[in-house]
Image 1 (cartoon, rainbow, N blue to C red):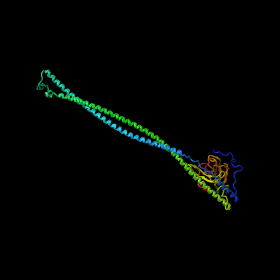
Image 2: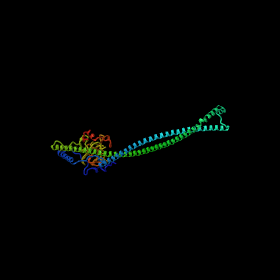
Image 3: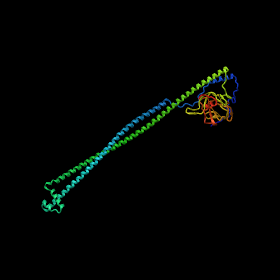
Image 4: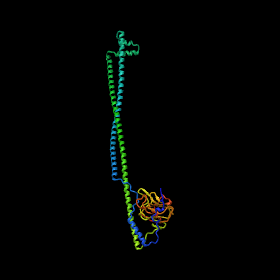
Length: 451
């Protein structure tokens, strides 16, 4: 929380009230003394840059370790990728074998069906032959029985004449022909045919059994090939899972390496910017020293005096005054990844701080980040802020004039060196909405410095 100082007196330099405004018409000797004192301050004081601390700078060993982890992970990814390729090739080989086994199984199954058909056909033919032999045997037996019962063999003509009808006539004629002396061996031939048919059926059954065994072997081979494919698919999936793990490790190592390298790059960029700021500060110091030397020479020659001041100090342009003297060490805008809402003017502790314009003090005392700060709402509607002051000589509600000393430069709060942090807020806004104070002063005739 912002807090006010217990009393105004506690902030005033011991033995003195608010610094008195310089009286016009100082002698040339007084002006020369002031110029020489300023030259001594320029020569001896080297206020630090008001810059944020440097970003982290990873060591070479940290970057090397991250790169080594990335290399190890990349090597493992490559090794596992080779295993995946080999597993895919093996899976392809086993897949082809499984297809061939399946084809062989289908061929064996089809052959088994054909063998079974041959067995069935042989069985039908065998049954037909057996029936024919049995029928012939019955007819011969019947004829023999009839011949025996009549007591004598019938002649062919008698047997035919004894027929009871056309069908019996034909049957007896066939029987007589069948059992004629020159046809007796027909039954033997029929029996031989039956035996041969039985042998063919046996052979067909054997072929069927052999084909069934081949079909069983083909089915077993197909099942084994399918099992090998399944096992290889599982092995490939496991290897791919390992590859995914190593790829994650590689990605993590790559991200860490990029983070460290990015931090290193950011630190190097910070160092380059810091070096540029320091170079600019040295150039500004040289210019200030040259200006002081020129002013001292002019004072010695009686051709001039101290620089023009407003009512109480600071470079003046009518109703506006430069808030303090010193070098611009940090400008308004984005700085090192953060927004800098004002301009920093580096100067030794104790350097006077003046009201940049006339107005009413809105706040004076403790301010977060600034240590001590003074806020003035000007008659022009702008609020100016003076931060990091060492001491302040005004209080809230007090009216001040442009050029009146209100504080002195300090190094309080979040500061990295003695300087004044100066802000300008339009429309009476106390906090936020800042505009570039260098441009704001330049538009009112006050040149603060280069940004």
